[in-house]
Structures are given as structure tokens and as C-alpha cells.
Length: 146
Length: 147
Image (cartoon, rainbow over all chains, first blue to last red; front, side, top):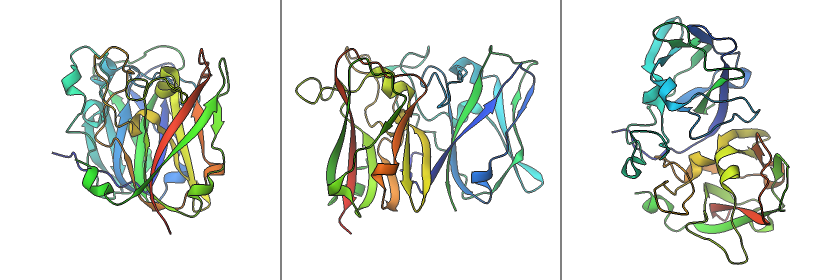
């Protein structure tokens, strides 16, 4: 349904440190994304991209099923969505995927140019404490315009 | 699905040689005389070892494809910063022996609002050294129009 071709203007790789675990993981400040008009957000997982650009580990796909993203716009929770819904790349080595499921036709959630408040946005863990191990980061791709 | 969007565009391949055993984590683009001042409409990570194996060109490595991020410089900034290489791979991973373990994306080709990219300030970043067993190349495809 959302399988439109993106026409990208800008892109930022955003990581959220998991540290020693917890149930809520706040986004660090994103100076480059202030006033950015967000077209869509992707989430990446370890079977596809094991390391962030700076070498932190990326949680695996199974972990995404326990987590959701809360994105603030102005003073309200504009989006509360499972991370799996933001997956746009299917790795063939993930259990349950087949070679035929290489394209997630539901990827690239269209966000229509919203301006997120990153300092209020966070990743929330369902069902208690989440700790995948030492030196893990969530990794998102933010497609945007200014 | 996407071909009609790219009809009539020119196409250029950029090749960056990577020496066997290289542990470099930042791979700069060489100057691209053919692509100076052109309007770039899209880039793609092309030619895996399945689609374009062997020959004089060689191929980039799984390690690079799954750990690499590309940064494109335009309008005085790194406007596309650390987008995963897998995000711009039009080749969908499969169980075909020899295919890289690349996932498919809806995007495949990184279609852009047309840009004039400064290639000498653009680069590939990896978290770990590429370390190919043999001399290899990173190959990027560029869709463009003359100014």
C-alpha cells in the first residue's frame, strides 16, 4: 500500500543508545533534524545491518517485535507504532522470511512532512526491561526535507 | 516498477578499487570528471557477485555491503548522511547460491530530488574494515542528466 518510490531530498542516520537497558529509550538531541520535514522513517535490525556506522551493535529482528516508537509532534504523541512496521528491508536469513518476501510492500510509512520533537520522542519496550547486551543502539533512517 | 521514472537518463558507473586485506573504514570517491555539475537523479549499489561476478572489475564484498554506509555531499553539506548501502541495493536477497545476503527494499534505486553531488567530498563509511581476500572494487551506479 505504501510502496511508492521515494524521491529523497536528505537522509540522516539516527541511533538511540540502549545502554544498560530499561523500558524507555529517549532519542538524543538531533540538531541536524530540527525543523526537518520528515517524509518517512525506517528502522534497521542486526541481521541486515549488524553494526551502526560507529560500530555499535544493532538489535535483531525478533527484538523489534517487543518495541515501538513514540514520536512527538508539538506537544502530542503523534505516532505510536510497532518498530516492525517501520522495517523496509527483509533479510533472507531471518526466520519466517522467505526469498519471496524480499520486499516489504508495507514499508516506508508516509509521514507527510511532520516536524518531530526528537527530545520528547522515544522507543518503548513492551513487557518490561529490555537489554540486548553491551554496546547496542537502535538505528533509524530518517528521510526528510528542509 | 521504477524503470519509467528513469527513462531517458544517462548512466555512469563509479568504481573504487579496494586492495586485498585493506582495513580502511572510510572510502573516498575519486574525482568523477564525467559527473561534475550533472544533475543526479538516483544512485544504486549495483553489481553484486551474482549479477556481475568476476572479470576485471571484481566485486565488492558482503562485508562491505552489509556494513557500509554512504554519505553524499551537496549544497554545502552532507545532505544524505550514512544511508545504509543495503537501502540502495536493487538486488533482492535470495537463496540463490552466490547471491549476497542483501535484503530487498521498496526503494532499490535511491531516487532523489535532482542534486549536484560533490563526489570528492562524498564517501563510504564502514564500522569495520572491509578486508577483502582479493583486490576488489566498490561499484556504484549513477542516473543523471547533463545540466
